[in-house]
Length: 347
Ligand SMILES: Nc1ncnc2c1ncn2[C@@H]1O[C@H](COP(=O)(O)OP(=O)(O)O)[C@@H](O)[C@H]1O
Ligand SMILES: [Mg+2]
View: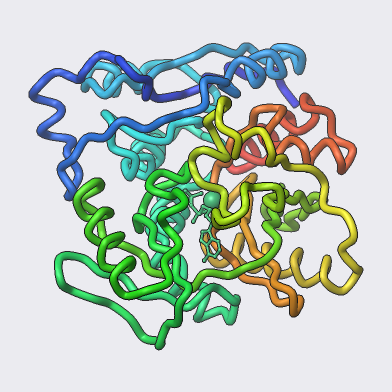
C-alpha cells in the first residue's frame, strides 16, 4: 500500500482537562445535558498505534479534538489521507462520537472503524438489543425505565442487572448493579437517573463465563481467537461482573484477581456458536473494520450477546490485540490490516 499521511484523531477526557469555552459547551450539550467525568485507563493506545504506523512507512501525526469549535474547523484542513479514529466523545459527551464520524464523512476524509450508523446503534444498548432480537441473536431480556416511563416487551426475572443505557467502560456498573429484589431495583434505577440523567437498562443477569470475540474485516470478517475474562476469583459475595474496578482500578483487589487470556476448554460446538453469534451481532449493528462482541456463556452452553463494541480499545495489552496476536498477527500487522480495510473504502 502507498505511504499515507495518517492522522490519529483523539479526544480529551482526562481529569482536570480544560473546560470547553461556555459558548460551544451549550451548543454541544446532548439531550441529557450533563457533562460527566469518566474514569479512563491512563494507558493510551495511541502511542502504540503511532509507532506501528511509522514502522509501516506511513506518516503518522496526532490531532486532538478538544471540544472547541476551532479544533473542528482546523480538522477540515488537516490534509490527512486517512484518519485513525480513536475518538469516544466530544466536549465531555460520550454519545457524540457518532457526530464526529458523520463530520468526517461530510469532509470526505476516510477514517477507520465504525460509521455514524454503527456508533449510534451500538451506543444505545436498548436499540442494539431490539435489533439483535430481530436477527434472533440471543441477548438477555430487558426493559428500560426513564422518569416513570417504561419500555418493555418481555417479562423479566430476577436476578437483574441495572446499567445506564448508553455508557461504556463499565461506567455506572459496580457490585450494586446486580439486584435481587424490587427494593434494590428501585434504588438502582434511581441511582442511574440521578448520577447519569439517563434511562436505566434493566436486564436479566446471566451467570456464566465472560467471553469476548474480536472481529477484523468487512466483506469476510474474521473472528479472531476467543478471549475470556476470568472473573471466578472475585471476592465471594460480589457479583461476577466486569465493573469499573475490574477494568480500571489498578489498586483494587477486583483488578488484581481478574485477567483476560485466550479462552481454553471450549469444545468445538460451543466455540462455533460463540463465533457465529458474535459475527451476527457485528453485522447486525453494521460494525466495520474491527470490533469486539462481549458475550456470556451459561452452564447450559447458551450464548448471550451483552453488547457489541465498534472501535474497541487497541492497546497491546487489551483483548482485541491479544486475540490478534493469538491469530498470528503482530501488533503492526493488526494496525496495517485496519488501515488497509479503511483505506479500501476510499478507493
Ligand atoms: N446481562 C448481564 N448478565 C451478566 N453480566 C452482565 C450483564 N450485563 C453486563 N454484565 C457485566 O457487566 C459488564 C459491563 O457491561 P456492558 O454492558 O458490557 O457495559 P460497558 O458498555 O460499560 O462495557 C460486562 O462485561 C459483564 O461482566
Ligand atoms: Mg462491555
